[in-house]
Length: 450
Image 1 (cartoon, rainbow, N blue to C red):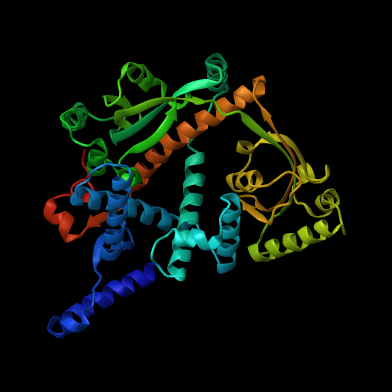
Image 2 (cartoon, rainbow, N blue to C red):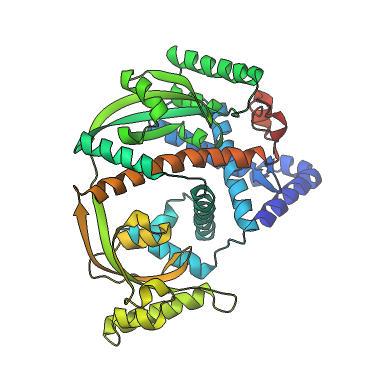
């Protein structure tokens, strides 16, 4: 995809220089010439991509009832595209690619999980041809794989944290408040000098003053936030009280709808938080799944396609009654821990498993065998024997606590990781609209000196 972008940009430049006069005089056959909006390491963001992303940001803001001016919408869109480009380049370095067969398999799995069709998923990417939609879907899968792999290793959860939150959840009972929040994080290093702290604090106080004087907080997030959160206007949706970071909770408990809290300092920078609304929601019970599985791992001589085909043939044999699932697991599974038990995994919540495995598991009905599912360990067949809801046991509260802590830390570390990869990337904005408005300041890597 990178090569095609570069070729298209070069072609556009050559065409503009060589045939500029001809095009200007032939308005009946007008040709759109693409050009570069930003350079990101060895990749480029095209004007056409930025235009489409800006339109999407403006559409999302409008759907939320928020306002954003075109410059800030364009800036937020470019922030999102830059982050995507960096992550996709990382995926390329790691050798992450999807063949047509793998895209088909992934689409089928995603459709099953979301009770839709592969065609509907591709249509969700907008008014583009099928090949472009498939590439966009593949990019999303790769971005998810890179993000999960990189961020998971940054998350650390102690037993003491889990035990404390489990006790809090038991005390709360079946209902807890949820807060509709939006956030702007201004990056600030933990070892920042006094002058740097004062500079970023002054920016934070200026943003807060603008918000208090009627400026739309989502639009301010589009203007000041970095990374992919800018395109969402900093909107976090509804956050259960048990997932709110402890340092923010005292101020949040005192706040009224519409208040802007902060700036509050954390290891990630200075936070400004807007409270839109508070509602009470039922605490979700823990669902545990009793499952069996068969694992095949890939290698240089045993491809993904071969693993998929072998498991798919094995699934058909099991469904015909030629062999039982337990017999097949003992004979073929490469998970030595469960193979001798006929693939038995026992009861466990989905969060205990690899994300790919978990997504396939929760999509199953009791008694159903999955199509081959890919995880970071290889390819699986999953048989769901039973599932049950556990509301009151100590293990249920601990599992719920672990999930809540993990979600919160993953979200925090994901934003921190985005800032880290941005800080080490070369970014140069060339989009005339943003450059003329001075909105490239803070995006260009040469200009980030907070």
